[in-house]
Length: 212
Image 1 (cartoon, rainbow, N blue to C red):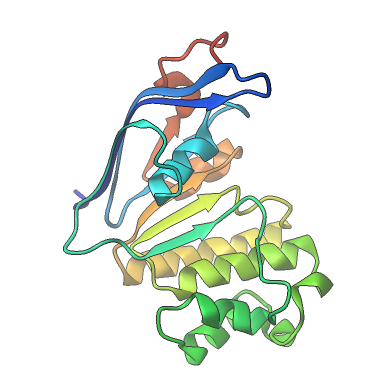
Image 2: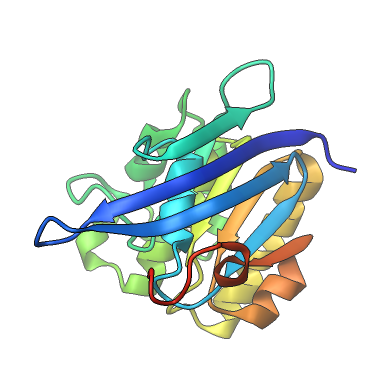
């Protein structure tokens, strides 16, 4: 059994609408992600998957509940957002090096090579296709050697060859280090293939369709 890493309890998460109305997004969620474990979140758009991922990352503290990391120190976080969010004024390689706690050029170059991006290392992000930019974002997240890895639709718009390449790299990474990983995806087959546990967030939450 994986050692406990992240323990999330979301009693209630709400958002404010354009007219000031309050909409509950998540309610009565208790989720654990162990070190060395991957948990996949699936469910229809609007069921709160990205909201839960932002809470897991510590980016959203506006909720009722708790976020506890069981470890000797705060986790080193690697996160891939739905959009790549690369620094447009830095090269591909610099985007990766800047994210690392201590620059590790060898690891950055290794990841770029594994993701078939070595030839674009000095390119500006604006010259990349969306699929390339997504691969850079994945390389950046892995380059920090994360304890907690959060992937929000990280494989969207990627062709099958690149998906297979990334899945192989992730499998190697998980074998090398005990990482707690939370994956948000609409691809149920991928979730079953990669994850130790698959959670349908719409079924887990106590919210009714009318609440959403």
